[in-house]
Image 1: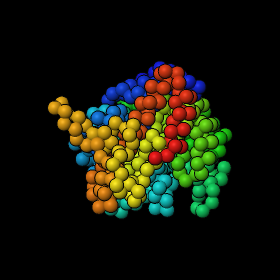
Image 2: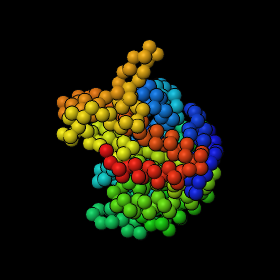
Image 3: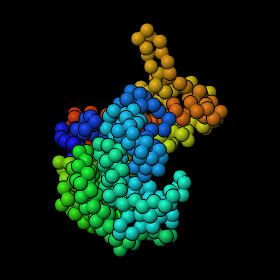
Image 4: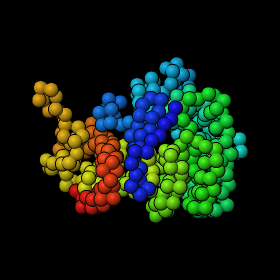
Length: 386
């Protein structure tokens, strides 16, 4: 099931509501990445407290570990990982792309050796649909070839991008046919490819729209291209997708990318950046980025962000008035220097809260008809620095 309503617009930007089998998602939305059935460093309870409405799972990695038999015994991914809100699963296409020389692509699918135990495996559009149906994800992504920015040491040519894009279109038809055969009652999204070539993006988009998917994604960005090329495709493609269906920009990005993407008509985002950067002591704040390992934080009594209400910055007040949490930069610096596991946990809570709260602020601004003013103030604040 998928039902998408647009509640407000400002330019290309949209404020919407997306109803799925496991709940309603308010858009624009950022989706934390839970590759192996968990968002690294946080509990499901913490995700609920910071109002994560939908999270990602990874088809490829869950297929490898723990294996389909284990997840099937729980009746799907929701019960396995104890998350009762919506889940989106990617198709495995990006992971196959990242295997590089370890995989062989053909018309039928991709042959590769399992990075876990070396088993010879064959991932096809049909297998991807079968795995995602077993996972029971609310949004299923078509199996595609993620067109690289560089191919064997040279920039991907127009001909190479066209071949890859057309292969993904043929795979999209096979995904749709298998999804229907399996009587999957969730939602299947098509993925626009075409590399850095706008006319190929338009051809991919037109063909996918003809297939009438419930939603659409823009793939093949954040694959090593310069930032200006990513922004060029972001400005070109999303707002050309059907206005009455949800639009998802895959693998993007920084806080600035999210605000820019919303302005270009994107409804849904995901990226490993807030969690991965947290594990490396890189924190996002309203007033710029902060690297907590730097010596200047050693004696700093301030929180990461005075304006942030997350557990790491402000703590939690119990019914009896007792406050827990609310940690100083000095303490977080100390944890990082000592290699304590609490350091990435607290950093992850903060970064995800920052991303999710940013999206809430964007939704509020769109409802009030002041998104342009919000975006201008956001850029000014971020440039100010911590």
